[in-house]
Amino acid sequence: TENRLWGGRFTGATDPLMDLYNASLPYDKKMFDADLEGTRVYTRGLNKIKLINDEELAAIHNGLDEIKKEWIAGTFEEKAGDEDIHTANERRLGELIGKHIAGKVHTGRSRNDQVVTDMRIFVRQDLEQLLKHLGNFIVSLTKRAREEIDVLMPGYTHLQRAQPIRWAHWLSSYATYFTNDYKRLQQVLERVNECPLGAGALAGHPYGIDRDFLSEELGFSRPIGNSLTAVSDRDFVVETMFWASLFMNHISRFSEDLILYSTAEFGFVQLADAYSTGSSLMPQKKNPDSLELLRGKSGRVFGALSGFLMSTKSIPSTYNKDMQEDKEPLFDTLTTVQHSVLIATGVISTLKINAQRMKGALTMDMLATDLADYLVRKGVPFRETHHISGECVRMAEVSNLSGIDKLSLSQFKEIDSRFESDVMSVFDFEVSVERRTAIGGTAKSAVLDQLSKLESIVNK
Ligand code: ARG
Image 1 (cartoon, rainbow, N blue to C red):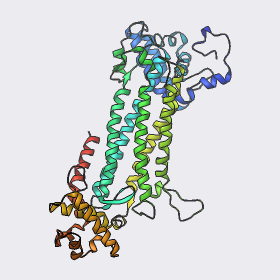
Image 2 (image 1 turned 90 degrees about the vertical axis):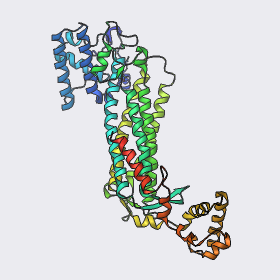
Image 3 (image 1 turned 45 degrees about the vertical axis):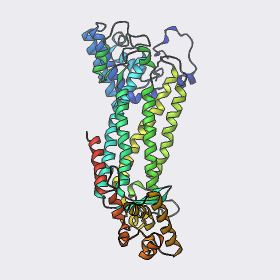
Image 4 (image 1 turned 180 degrees about the horizontal axis):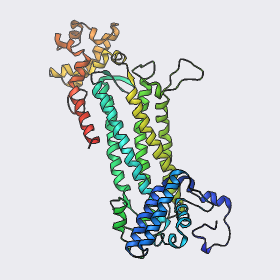
């Protein structure tokens, strides 16, 4: 505990459990690089205002290089009293280059602006990588959709067969969700990328450090405009976790569809072995564990968001130790989302579909709306045609026919005299799907158009 940076006014030892309870090093050491980078730029800022001379700066930077090597090699030795990554790195710098010079790096800086600078650098890096993975995932969906554009399947509402759609249309639907997530992530990144460094503990910098310089050198867009906000704002953490929650919400719906489609009852898709597991008891089983985990992990991401929202509510202005609770849920969320995107990409690029089963699940009653539309084209109001088409469905049922397409022309005419012999052309799934050419519909041209638009957003 002689290592404590704030030891000056303390005489009593802390409870050992308090040391453990207080320490964040076990989970914040993954920010070692961001912390060293922050100090590298900060000391250049101090050099610019003559608080550190060139020689001292060179020694500090050599020390920081050395520490980085130690973290990467796994030889960095953690010591009692290393509360967090900031104190650990500074303690080690003192050992390497002497306390006299190392003792200058923290001039005008507080762990309050330091920690949140590290966090923003770390999160930015992670989200940038995530954005790439998400782009690949979206492309894996659109690529598949292009390849399998001709495959028809039932579209469902209330999980009941509703109208025929293209399998590519289903893929494009989720690609649309995920592309919105992609754009939303870009916006979150913009707000993550603002620089708190130079705000001090809360009140600003007493030596007039150039905050534009710090911000720019660390790759941020701008310095945060109020020192109190700079140290206390964790909106970027909340927003990241909210982003992740909404994304996982989409992922869980996507997974749920595919889990259903992979059952023997549907038989539309088959997961690759790489993303399935077997049963220890039942030899025949092939379980869609990847999809179930994607669905299940959404819960833990929502939990992280709501937990941290509760931790931060009612925190008084500026830094309070409650805020250290930002790291574990955030880091867990980042890892979970990163892995989830990669797994989902793997699942969708290796999935086998059974186009026969998909087509086989289409039933003629799914064209009842098209039958109503047939009469609309002959000038009958839709409310009326809806009713007439319903009567056809009933007549087919009571006559024990396998579908409305099996009604004879005279039966059609019996229900409504405006039916003519061309009514039989309605009973074609391909024709039904191809009618929907308006933006966002199931026609091949409309689906291809959707795919191009999505791809152009991701490839920008
Ligand atoms: N480990 C702390 C955190 O993660 C660093 C900031 C500590 N600042 C302070 N004034 N105690 O939030």
